[in-house]
Image (cartoon, rainbow, N blue to C red; front, side):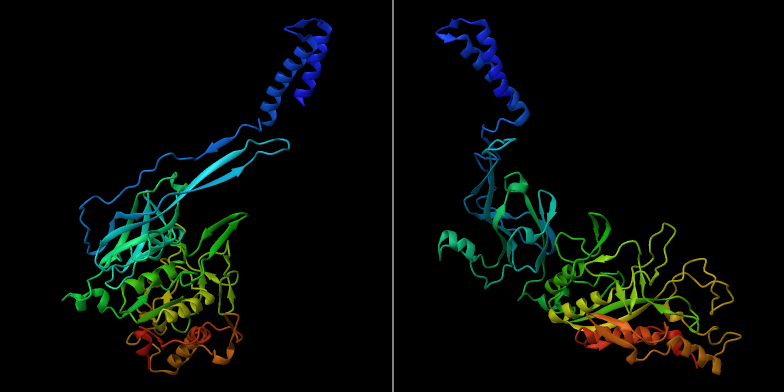
Length: 479
C-alpha cells in the first residue's frame, strides 16, 4: 500500500517541478523515488516475502570412529560405558520448505534442513542381559525414541538386516560374542544436527558355560517379592497422570525415560536380569487403625483428594477417591505410606506377571497406620497411647493374653475376634468392568479385605497361590 501511495505522490511532485534529467521526465523520476521509499516501508511492516532463507544446513559432518586396534571392553555386573562406532550409513538430508507465495502479510520462503543417520555401536565383549538406560550428551533418553535394536552378544546372533540392506547380503559380520546396538534413521535435529555422545548402562551376568555360571545370583533367584505394596498406581501397566489444573498434569507412575509405567519397566528388568525367576509375591496393602482387634478396621486409603488419576480413576472395593480415608501424614505433610493400589492396577499387574511367565502368589498385606500421639490404649501395656506405625503381629485383644484384665479364654475374646473378622461373604462382591464392588452392609473386617482381593484375583484370571493372615501372631495366641 505504501508503494502505491508514495509512487503516486512522487509522480505528482515530479510533475509540479517539471523538466527532465538524462532523458527521464521529472514525473517518472518522482514515481520511481516514491515507489522505492514505499517498498522499503512495506517490507518493514509486512515482511519482504521474497528473499529465500536457508536454515540448519550442514556442510561437513564428523563421526567418531572406532580406533584402529582399540580393545573391546569386558565388563562385570552393571556399569556405564561409552562404546565405539563400528558401522555407519551415509547421512540422509531432508528439506522442509515453508513460507513464500502470495498473500499478506507475505512470509519469506524458508528451507530447513534436517539430517538422520543409521549406525552401530559396539558395547562390550560377551553376552549381556540388558541395556536398561541410555544417555545422549549426558541426558537420559528412551530407547523407544531412538529406534534401537539390541544384540546381546550371543554365539548364535545373526547379522543386522538394516546393515545388510545397505552393505549387501553376506557382507556384514554377525559380531557373535560382541554386544552391540544399531540405531536406525537416528534423527539428529534435537542434537544440533550432529551425532551425540552416547553412553549406556550395561548389565552383564556370568557367562553361560563358565564354571561359575550355575552359582551366579541371577541364575539362582527363582522368586521375588514385589514391594512396596502401596501407591495408588504403582502396580498399573497403564501410564497414569494426575490432572492438577487446566493444561497441567503430573505423572503418577511413570518416572523413567523408558516411556512406560514404573511397573512395566521393573518387570522388564526382572525378566532380563533374573531369567530363572519364575514366581512373584504380589503385595497389596490396606490399613489397620488399632491394635485392639475388636476396634480395628481394615480399609483401603488414598494419598490425596485434590486430583484424580487419568485415564484410571482410583476405585477399591466400591470406595472412590472422595469417599476413602487419607493415609496419615508426617510432620512435613507427607504421607507415611503410599495409598492402596487401585483395583484396575492390581488386575493389570496380575495379568502382566502371568503373561511374562511368572507364577503369582497374591499377598494381601495389613499396614498399621497409627501415628505418634494417638489416643488409643495400648493392649500390651498400661500406656494410654499405642506405638506409632506398629507391626500387625501386635494386633490382639483389648488386653493381650497373659496381662491382668485380659478377656483371653472368655466369651468376650470370641466376640472381639468376631468383630475383627466381620460378616462379609463372597456373595457381597460383584465384578464388572475390571472393578470389584461390595454390596454388603457397612463392614471393614478382615473378611471383606480378604474376599475383596480374592475377587480381584478371580477377575484377573486367577493366581497360583493366595496368602491369608500373614504374620498375625498376636491373633493366633487368643483362646
